[in-house]
Amino acid sequence: MSALSASCRLTTIALCLIVLAACENPLKKQEEEASKNTFACQYNGERLVVRFADGEARMLMPDAQRVTLYQVPVASGVRYTNGVIELRGKVSELQIVREGVATSLKDCEPYAMPASR
Image 1 (spheres, helix red, strand yellow):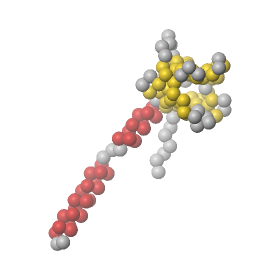
Image 2 (cartoon, rainbow, N blue to C red):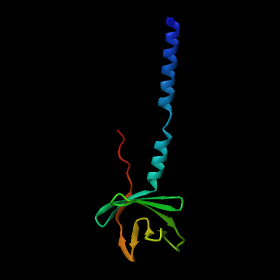
Image 3 (spheres, rainbow, N blue to C red):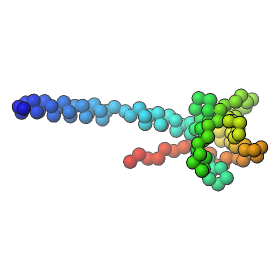
Image 4 (spheres, rainbow, N blue to C red):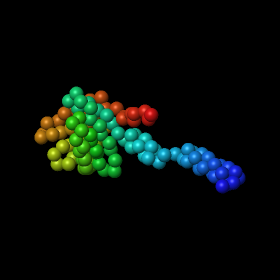
């Protein structure tokens, strides 16, 4: 291999690395968009995370159980249910209803993504 072809190969590799570095990570952008519709709340003193997307509310319960609720029509506010659990209210004043007992979610705030390393 001549010095010219080695130099050409190194230049090509460097150029590819520069192009790749300039590309924005589409998954990171999707995560940032999703976090705008995600809220962290206190439920019975423990953290619960709710993500609203496309007619669904996806909850990560304090015990790490994932629950999907489906949007149902309501005159005002929001209402999601899966037949067992119901989430209702306004985004800043949500309640979870289980077995007919309503529990208010407290301190609901937009979810902040952990800083990347």
